[in-house]
Length: 505
Image 1 (cartoon, rainbow, N blue to C red):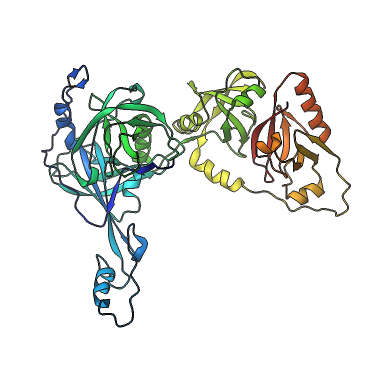
Image 2 (cartoon, rainbow, N blue to C red; image 1 turned 180 degrees about the vertical axis):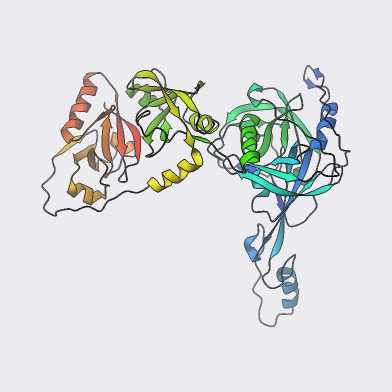
């Protein structure tokens, strides 16, 4: 994105002052479906009145030192004996903080909503309360309560807070089903844009399943209901007064709304909120595979009629499917009854599944569909396991007098035997096997695919290769079959796998 910027819809400032709402709290929201004219709802007044009491302003403060805070200005260097020295000392060193270290209070403003009135549970965005020293929740009747953090999830940008509701009757809203929302459906946002609490805006669902590269589970609802800085963490309601999204980001060249806002769908957020309330952390399902997209070339190489699903590029050692249930080269097209249309669908669907659940997975293996059953592990444990798997043992007992390797040239690559000499030359780990690529011709088909010398061909068209002759034979066989592309499984020097297709014409 060049001129436009994706912004978290939160407002951060050095000046306190979230506006208190001038609306009386309502004990139970009165959900009244608005009447609709031909060009939209005639009014959403009744609906908004019943929901305003459940939407809150989130105010946080954080102490930062010197110029560490956002927007901080460095102390100017003045000539010795300058008459302005005292003035600048007062302004920069003593402003809003400790005179000794120049620390100052930074305040952040955002939005949130109550989902449990009895327990005092409030939902907001993680980025609204991140690194905060103090968190306050401001209600529509002017009451302000201190909040404690229950849990956060950085992957989905969700946070759960708790306030003590004693002596203060709260109003709560509930999550609705975001999967039922269609493009064109009317929605309403309530929040605290630019500190102006209790602001209601109306629009439609502009698009669904948006990926804005903010996290691994991006599946945003896009809306043209005005969302600005300070709306972060606030609710997006359907016409029944149910929360179907958490407003979190906007695209804007100026910092203000241009009618492109994004909300975390309730289908994703509600499960995260439940886990944070129960455990104080997330406990996501984990399959234990590395995946990549299925391109048209890869689909053709695998004998698939259409490009769909997630291609398994590797299996993590010690993971749930390290028993051969799922193998590198398999394409996952359905998981626990849910279709996997593209690669990014799989991590989200798996993460939403309970740890320890046994699920059916429909895969394509060597052109044939088959169903396998796997039991999911826990993602948080898997991330530790995967990080410990990086690297490899490259310390080998080698001889400088290794025999000359036999080589072959194919598809713009020079390939050779993987022996002690080539392992030493390219620092290839001992557990990597196959045929090493020793050179790549400039402007060749292999170069176009980003193939580098030192990578190792482990499979061609899902059949393993061990010698340069194997490579030549497999390419020749594919050409005889009329294939236009060759599917190669390549290993890096540390053993990490990826698939590429190379044109054979």
